[in-house]
Length: 173
Image 1: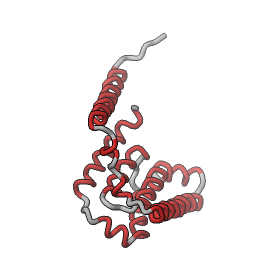
Image 2: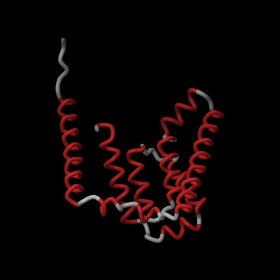
Image 3: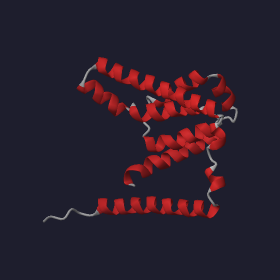
Image 4: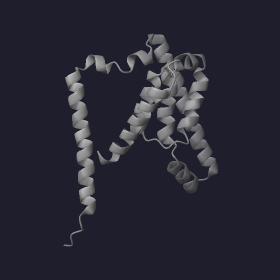
């Protein structure tokens, strides 16, 4: 829980901002510019350090606003795989040529998977922005509330216990 609490909360806040500030007509633009929307998510995901934990709620919020699911998948795949630390390590251990190959393959595979996911949605006739968020209609409100309280309690407990352990002096044996 220590590893995911902070990025998860950051991802939730960013997703909330996207849901509040992004226009509702993103669907029209994304559907008319499928490849361009994927490229934009690729360009946004590569330099941004997002782990899978924080990128998931961000992608869900973008889909809710109408982004095609393939573009969201490109963001989910490329973002966590191409952070600055990974890029520096690949360049230092191998060389610039290996780094270019690494980034190119991530881009190509992400785009290919994005097109594949959009194709699956197209042939199945499912609109992702309609499906995202339906859990609130399936799961009773009491279960949602209890789950939110439990998650919040675990995050707070973890933070408090982590701070208490950091403040304790080391014992010598």
